[in-house]
Image 1 (tube, rainbow, N blue to C red):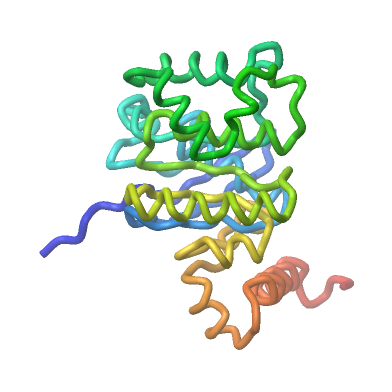
Image 2 (cartoon, one colour):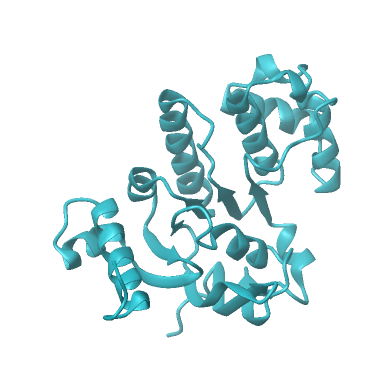
Length: 255
């Protein structure tokens, strides 16, 4: 009996910019219906990895696959069934939330866009934002509208880059719960990039630690905590990252 193919796969992915390696031969596989966390500090290579998985950046080496499709050569078939959100990618500010969502809904070929937007607005509690220009919204409100954009095409795979970065603690907790319910009800797969350790520990079935483009460790959060004899995933990450830094410095380097 063969196992079902992974929803998302990175196979020896590498990327360089101006001679500097920002993603260095990383590999992982994300089973369908699970949440996978890319965990690391800013500049660790999380966003670059997601962009390669989306087919928006061509890897220098390796292969990215989503829903069985090679993202360098066949990405449009996969992207019909996936979506991406980041608080660092702005929607057009002069358009209202409804206008933005309508444009994206038509691009995705969503049937009955108006009804779909109304449904998403109720689910995300953004009805009062629909007719407000995006440029007049707070960062947190823009994030919630951006999540609405992600859900327009009922994606089987969601790529989320720091989804709660601009939210209040209360709003962030609510959004994490909402995303968990969406995943469980649709069997969607979520790839989450974050440096928020408690968030990743709470949301993810498995995680990968990235530092300076290198994959240091991966596994289920509870298993990693048990294996390293720590209390939290953050403590595990700090231990692994420090060990990697010591190894890079070498025995003769100053601390």
